[in-house]
Length: 397
Image (tube, rainbow, N blue to C red):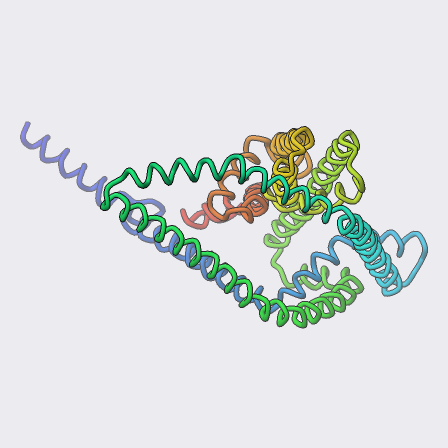
């Protein structure tokens, strides 16, 4: 019996320590897998760092690549249907695109100038009404309240009065410091803004020129990239590129859809409220709706406060209801529209929006779905599967 126990113990030790997989010990296999895992982590980290550094010095050309990607269908259409040389098709497309953007900007500027003239005629009258309302509010509400507080303050003992005065002085100092720092930051940013304008013009020119050359040589560049890549990377890379391209167009389509819905809702609401220059205001609100959450609030919140303070309570309530409708439809429609346009699950899109917002703030509302698209694309291209097979030491199929 003792001999059997010793034999079993010896076999167990041999299995646990010297069990082989393909001629290698388990300990050796685990070490190799761990080293491969570290290699993968190092490659990913170094790749992200390199991509970040390269993007900081080549971002005009990255912008140009995405513009060329967006206009490529129209360039191909002109080249195929009208038999234009590709350079001419690219030139026509860029001219049309530039003219369309310039036309929209000019239209908005014209509407803003017209609306500004209207405000210049209306604001003085409204401002006088606001001053009269504030005077009435101060006479009827603030002065009696001040008198009551003064009587109450005098009834306190000296220590309590000193404590209250110190707190008031501390609050006043804090407010003055905050306002002073805000004004200082604004004044300090003005030179930076002025210095940014020449840089923006330079980036615009380089991006425009790079867009022309990239789009003109698009097919040659794609063939060159395919020749450089191995066969396996070429297949996976093509899948990733097509999925990201589809997601990019879907994201732009989704944002355009959401902005259009917001503009139409605001226009209908302003027409019901009989607001002058409703089209101009609706276009401006639709434009700022690009900014998540705060977009429409930049216009609505000050407008509602002004209407309420000036005594036009029914109009303020109407604007408040319209603002709530815009917010609710945005929160309901955004996950649905993004999921249908990009091809993501609505719940996954909602989670990506929330996680992105928590990690990156407002920028995360854009970055979250984009990162989710990239992860899904890499998964569909079997990139994670190949990485896992590399880590465990199996050849890729």
